[in-house]
Length: 109
Length: 114
Image (tube, rainbow over all chains, first blue to last red; front, side):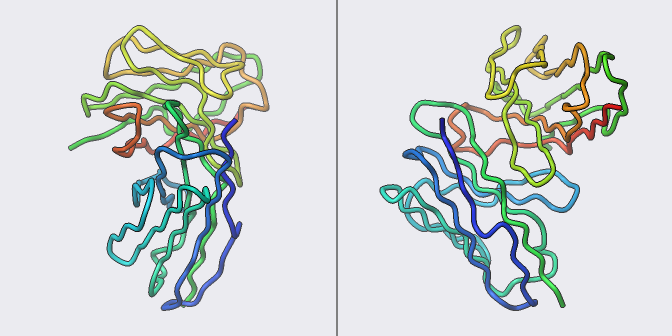
């Protein structure tokens, strides 16, 4: 079945530093999304990016479909960016989102 | 405002008991999903539905049933709760199954089976 691997598993940054999160998937993704989960909270969609580069605010996602990988770059991290970031993909005609295990980001003062 | 509401927000159940988790959406979405999240893991799909009165199995359906009596409501049923079903459960809805529009998630239900 579809598999999604994220790295690193956890990341600690000082406020103002940049973060780079990686996502690799086992099969061609027709849909690729990044989600954010605040500690103890729900998930919210950050970016939908099945291919190419997308920006929103301080977030940039680059997906290289042929190489089955995507990245999420967070610039000038803030304490409120702390939480878990998930990559999720859909392969082929499958309607199911498959999630990675997430990257726990902690931003310190 | 679009919303997915889950109830209860937390529940303690006894092993072997019946548990029903409810989900209500006001988004007029066709697709609804139940996911399970275990500590340190991503979400895994249990059941989903794309039309009322019909449900489909996800990746980990064993031990769970689902019911979609209307477009707005989707329930997850644990007929015989077990310790291994302790987890946080998320309901989500989406307009289509293709996820080019991100699903909206509820706040989650924290279930502890003792």
